[in-house]
Length: 111
Image (cartoon, rainbow, N blue to C red; front, side):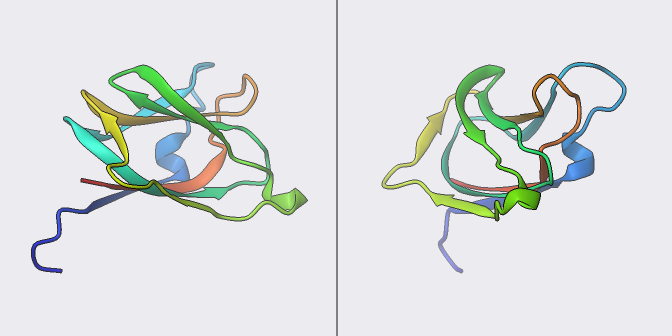
């Protein structure tokens, strides 16, 4: 759409997983200041936590749910100006101390 300032970025499960270490994987979705306007999370069969970060500092967590237990895709639109990230937009995925992704994918909408 002409004149739109909305950007979209998606990461799949492979990009959000770290099977080589025992630490959560942190992925940078956008490097620079921005406002998160909304997001979509597609859960896996194991419940866990998706942590949104601003340059490495935790901003908020989302419980991803368990698709096998009936959890479905989560879509959240943030009102008005969204959430301001001053440094960069990052996401970290963990399952109660494990090192695999709790999501099949995440999509972020930002301006």
